[in-house]
Image (tube, rainbow, N blue to C red; front, side, top):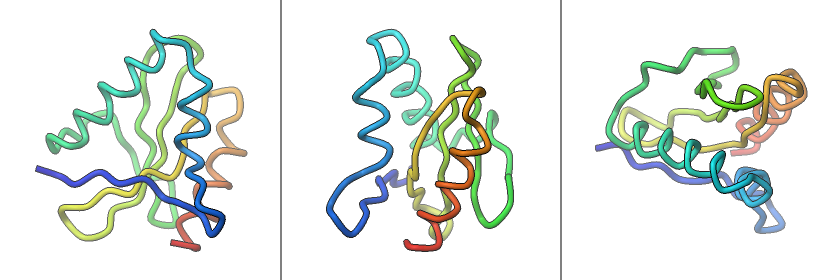
Length: 101
């Protein structure tokens, strides 16, 4: 079992939670299912994108993505989420969050 935690910035806010809270119910369900799969150790829809960051691709809607880093073998830190449209901005933000973490 993998421990999945959210990155929280110095102000106490989670970039992932702020993104997730704006999703509609269908998208939120798909994203929550993806996180459950990560908890189970299923990294089949992930790829490394550099700087220790991984992208979990969800084939639904506008192409949702979840960005995370691995803290050891049993801990995943969720850094944020987004869509294909804003992919590069989301990756840049995730890299900054990971460095801060």
